[in-house]
Amino acid sequence: MIDYISGKVEELTPTQVVIDNDGIGYRMEISLQSYAYLEGKKEARVYVQVQVNSRDGSEVSYGFANKDERALFQLITSVSGMGAASARMVLSSLSAEEFRQAVLAENVALIKSIKGIGLKTAQRLVLELKDKIVDGRGSDSEALFSVASNEVVDEASSALVMLGFNKANVQKAIQQILKSNPTAKVEDIIKAALKML
Image 1 (cartoon, rainbow, N blue to C red):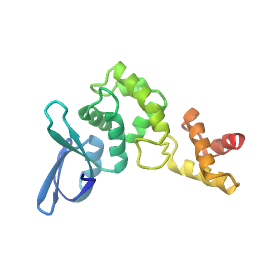
Image 2: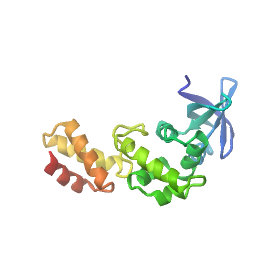
Image 3: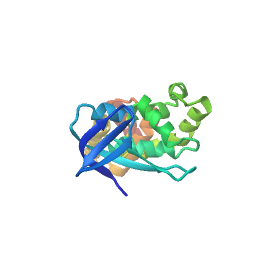
Image 4: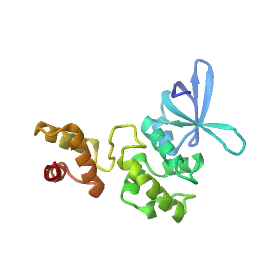
C-alpha cells in the first residue's frame, strides 16, 4: 500500500495533481485545501488514500497535502452515506481545523452549508464523529484539539506536569475541559484541571 509519493509536480488543477516520480506520473484527486498548499511548488510530497468504488470495483487515488487532512478524510468516509467525493467536498469547503471545530461545536448549519450536504447528513456527521474527534481520531497528532491551538494545550499540559501531575491524567483532564470549552485559554485550562486532578 502506498503511503505517500514524492516528486515533481507535473500537473496541478484545483481538483487533480500529477506527481512525477522517476518518470512515472501518479494522478490523484485533491481537495481545494491541498491545491492551495501545492500551488506554486515544483516538488512535493503527497499523502495517498486509495478508494475502491463498491459499484464497479474501480480504484481512485486521493492525494493530501498532509497526513492530518488524510486522517480526517478517512474519518469522514467512515460515516454511513459519506463517499470519497463528499469527503473531498467537505475538505474543499472547510479546513480540517474548521471542520473539527464545527463538529465539536455541533454547528450543523455550517456543515449543512457545504455543497451536497443536507440537514440529515450534517446531523449524522456531528453525531458519528464528535466522540471520535474528541478521542483524537481523524487527526495525525495525538489528542489534537484543533479548536484550541496546540500551543495552548502544550503549555497547559507542561505546566500541570511540572506541578507533579501524571501526564496521562493531565491529558484526560484537558480533553474533558476542551470538550466543554473548546476555546479555553491556558489559564482557564490549568484552573479547571487543578479542580479535577
